[in-house]
Image (cartoon, rainbow, N blue to C red):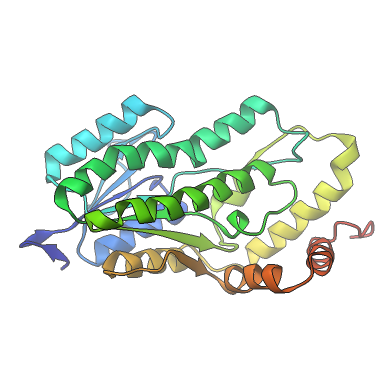
Amino acid sequence: MTVMGGRSRVALVTGASGGIGRAIAERLAQDGLEVYGTSRRVPSDHPGPASIHMLPLDVTSGQSVQACVGDLWARAGRIDVLVNNAGYLVTGAVEEVAVEEAKAELETNFFGVVRMIQAVAPKMRQQRDGSIVNISSLAGLVPLPFWGYYNASKFAVEALTEALREELRPFGIRVSLVEPGTIKTALYTADRKAPPMEAYASRRARFEKTMRQFEENAPGPEVVAEKVAQIARSRSPALRNPVTRQARVLPLLRKWLPPSWFDRGRRATFHLDDEGF
């Protein structure tokens, strides 16, 4: 069992009702942490393990965030690990996605992370210890067409985390990113699709078909959970922690290859110009 001063360390995982968040919560519980997961709605008979306590949380609401963190603090008296996982995907060309839908995605994927950090960081500074893990994406380093606002939200999380890491370092707080490539998760099947425009229809359809094929062959969320567990155990975790071969290789190729070569490869990978695909 993982203990701090004779008692279990406490973890808070957002977006833990399923998928990657659920896997992370279960993996941290296996390591002996006292885990609090969150979701917008928590049924009284939630099917999760008894070792995971579920709390209601809407990361787009400052009031909800403060209530959740306050409730956890009242129960446990400390927060040792914060995992910012809550997020979702809007699929569509930049022109196709309504501005209000784009704002809503950023409210969850980026400003939701900000709200959680601003609520939890004071507690961790009081403890002079803690670990914050922000779940980013390969798309936060190598953007994909038709995922424009998701890319933007993850690019923003990348920059925020790098700044935060240095700001909180003097207080004994460790800050890291986890950057998964394609994972078999509901992110792709439950995404919100913008109404299509004819001008983008054929290329968007080929992109979405390729993404579905990648997802079919992808590892499950447990690989992300294992990486988070490693970070939670470490006293000096890396800033960036890629998960999957895609996430390790593609940022390097983007850095090393001439831009025109990399762009040509991206178009070929997603069959963007292959009318017969």
